[in-house]
Image 1 (cartoon, rainbow, N blue to C red):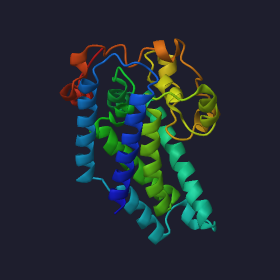
Image 2 (cartoon, one colour; image 1 turned 60 degrees about the horizontal axis):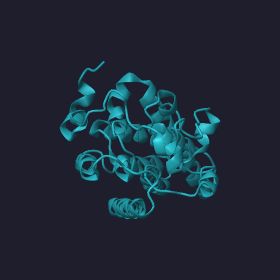
Image 3 (cartoon, rainbow, N blue to C red; image 1 turned 135 degrees about the vertical axis):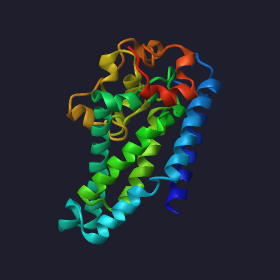
Image 4 (cartoon, one colour; image 1 turned 45 degrees about the horizontal axis):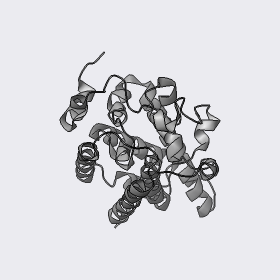
Length: 261
């Protein structure tokens, strides 16, 4: 049941953002949508299948196990259930921010995460462009965190839905009025805010790590308000992967294991 709810939310948000991109795009995309979408969606399908037959329900099972045995910080504190749910959501989001930061700073994690950044355009399908090993490592990391903090099971389900929904939203090529964007990004990561993170300029790539809550980047001084060259003219991707042959589906799968200057 939990898996059906998550997939329904994922496909629902994906469809909304894809339609929004068609009718109100933020940037005109130069690359072929078919070529990029086929690669990104193929990676997504592969990841869904791998997760389904490996660590699919690990996060929820860990939360239920921690709750039943009274393991973790939140399970030993006498706190009301509503506060435990809020703390679970906030702490897990902070942890994902930390994981994202580490994925850029630790070379062996970057070898996996850079697949996400090789996309030379930025739209809703960029949100699902991840290497399968990074997805598995991320799930294992979340399981350890869930046991450590004693995450509430319902909050874990909600967090997984919120995380995937926010990722689809803030990777979308949608136009939001600047006046509204300024207000929304006080709490949530907006597409304009996260697009900066996909710039070819390293100082911009090394900023705006948040996926859901925007406060972490301000709190830890990793926030960049706007790209140097503006959203319409900024170049997206990685400078060392500009040729289309370098970012084909099969090459992305092998990329973490290949050496490149």
